[in-house]
Length: 288
Image (tube, rainbow, N blue to C red):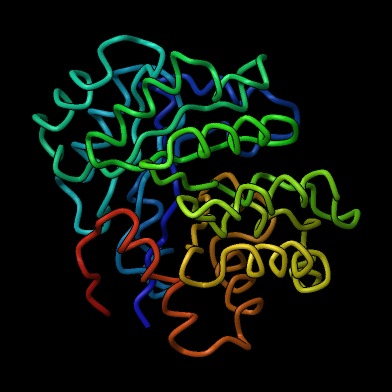
């Protein structure tokens, strides 16, 4: 079975700062993580193509990611960034598509997690920007948590022509049972026909050295995601390197395979490649 890793990052701290790495507990991530570091890890897990996702809200990063895709046999798609509140979103997207690798631009994302306004996604200016993303034939990746998810539901409902991909299942807290507030908002998001879930991020949120707890800690959230989206609206992503501090890339993949082991071959194929291929419009992966 070919596997698409639909969510990972790369960064070179000598080129750009990564402000989110200043958070306590992220010290292991304060170094360079390059595509050359991921390639052998991905190959060992049968990953044939990937989608690289933005991390900073600066215009210079997306052209660099597009160039990376243009020169890589692994990166099939780029989820980049434009200023959604600016009036020139269509022009900004058109300019990105003219760059090397511009044909691999598949989506746009803004790091809503850093916005102090929990209703940022529902602002009129942002909704206009999201409509422009839809007009350009791209999708929008949502990275949000907690009370920000309510605005994601509102934005998806207000922009039915745009496909919204919820990164990391909305960043639920893992380890202390299911937060019903998260679960209720997640279900509201999944109930909308123009939404998709990314089976990523939470796969790495395990105690150090306790990959054996993956089933007990992660399955409740996975089952809610499956009930809301089903395999045809879920896609696998590693969230490398963020989610691999404790269990590593192989551990994240192992947790995903363990949780989906009771699914049919067709259902597993949807989660591990088919959904990402369809939603992002990726080329058909070639099995290695």
